[in-house]
Amino acid sequence: MDLKTLLRSDSKMKVGKDYQGILRRDEICEEFRYDEHFIFVETLPPAPDKRNPQVFRGKHITITRRDDGSYRPNFRPVDVVAGFNVGRYAAGVANELLWALEGLVGER
Image (cartoon, rainbow, N blue to C red; front, side, top):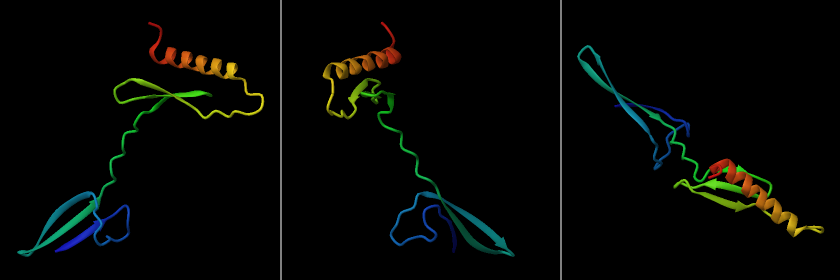
């Protein structure tokens, strides 16, 4: 039996490593002599779906969409330095929430 491998991840198959792919059998008849030839082609693993994609990215918050379609606001890191104004920060967060939600769900 002959086995030809076309691998994407390694140049040679490694002992004990599993490979995902397609195995195909080619049967060749040469004057009533049958030789079995096989070819294995490694396939790429399916790309995972991105969980909870980011649908809004602001200066103060980000909003992600969950699998069930609901939205989750997340605070971005806050750099509290000299001159940090809590009222201005809170107003900025409130404005971003308003802009994001208006853009995502609209006015009802």
